[in-house]
Image 1 (cartoon, rainbow, N blue to C red):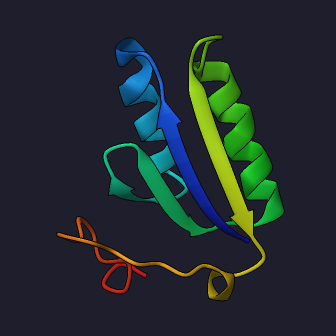
Image 2: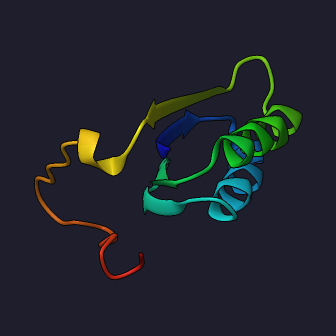
Image 3: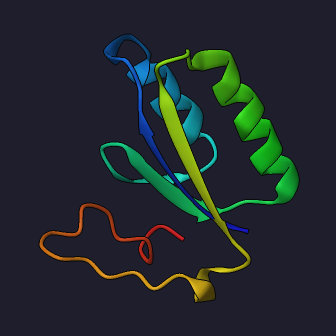
Length: 86
């Protein structure tokens, strides 16, 4: 599956969330990650995130069957080119 994750968490947990997501996905913005994951990887990632986040934190996960279903358009500077990484 192609996954996009965005988050808004308390400052004291930002580094923990970022490090967790870095193990699975590619960081494309300060609070946004994307990439291909299997269902078991998604479940493991969710499990790891649930151990970090608290009641007032927010993590949003968008799942698509494939990257072909995602239309990606960038206005302004592209922070990280996916094609050079993947």
